[in-house]
Length: 497
Image 1 (cartoon, rainbow, N blue to C red):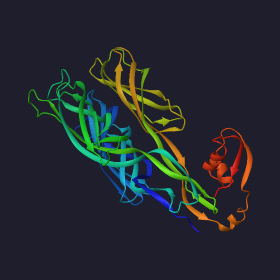
Image 2: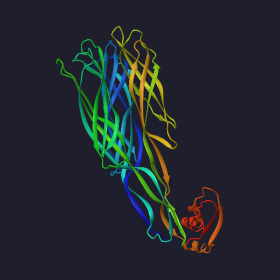
Image 3: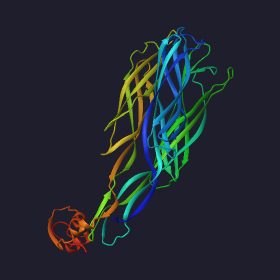
Image 4: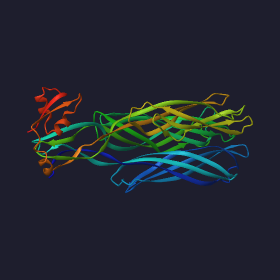
């Protein structure tokens, strides 16, 4: 027959699915009749905004827009910009997801490539990458003992873990005013634009997640009369708080922030003293893990009958911590014009490869120069980067992100230094095997009931008295009582009653 167990229940959010996917976008773009013919593509970049995410049975669907900007040298010697908005819909197969799940997603524009088909047509290719995780309300049930404990010996254990206590999302909007770059007329127009969200500090205080960061914008302008280019890098700081449904003493917030909209409005033509007005729409998602100490029944036996425990295997997050590293890549970009003037330099981190003791990536560098004759040219370089990690045994990385923190070009040379910032979470799992059910085998007990009332054995230091007591149908207390608290050597093991 079965022995009834006392069950402790802990409510939490279980991660039921985690995965990623890439959507390739392809488009042929015809240059408008009002624009001159294309001679050379100088740069291709963009801003990715997320319009929504839906979780259905078996799938996570994400809708985004890649607002792409292409800078090209025209056959008439001028510098021109093109813009194209490509919708991106990603469907990630999530077998265990359903409508009751809380979903957190991180979406980024991975690559943008452009090829000249002819002087009036471009072939465009972009990749949008998404990572997502789904969480659902769950109850962790662990046996704490038995309903009838008379004559039953119980071995209890405990483990430290971080359970997901809450998942929330918040949207907010920011506005800012930017000055035109030095020497740039206010009637200039934007040739290309890029924006990214950088989160710098996340804290949990009194049931709230406080986070701050900045939105970095890079805008390339051209005046209307002479076609001169001006580059501006701007930052809009933000500080926000998010109410969470937990207020534990040890809570680890994990934050993901992305753009849902980015707009830049220039002053009306002919106005003086005006500034650029920027407006950003942002979504922040937070997963809060709360430290818990869980007690559970790891073993039991009886000296009155034969009990056979059944166990289940549980994998729990034992520890989680933030890992960060900064790396400066110094390299020389070949092909720098001898008499060119640097207009701007940009860099992007490439694919991320986490390994056991390091994270490898690459950085793509693009430098735009103005030549003495007024024309423009672009040079490119690529360098490898590696972040050395100091992980504890059993730790593994997840949610690894690498961003460009700064770029510096040495004037008059091709020497470039790019500072990269790597952020990740280091997680270690623990495995426990708690008792989940107990059956009584009366027939097996009848064959062991005639065991001697005491046995004399020799044990080495470090012997597990629980194992001895279980094997010889005794108790730990009885063994210590008759042996004067001696735990090894020659021990008398009395039969339990």
